[in-house]
Length: 120
Image (cartoon, helix red, strand yellow):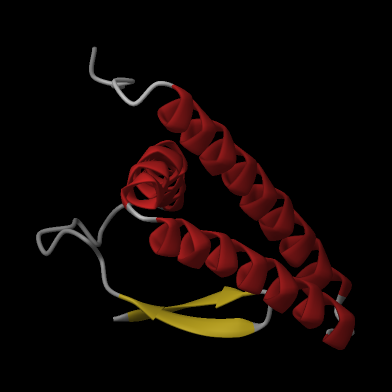
């Protein structure tokens, strides 16, 4: 188990792959992490949009989750004296806002074209 520092908050994580090679050099670790983040950025908007389409209550919960996260990051930025931590939060906030916009766009597409399918 490891610990990640995100905007001054420690988050525990476990590697997704049990057989992960812990002898990877730093560049390989950064590449692996970058690929994981890219995959999540690609997956989340479509997944959350499809969940939100199932029920208005679910769509509202997804919207609330984005808003809660944005408010939490803004609070962390205001409370943190560290420029480095604030820079990280600013970048995270921009990512959350891009994901939020992507989810809203996908949800709008799915509402206007229920037969819309990413696999076709």
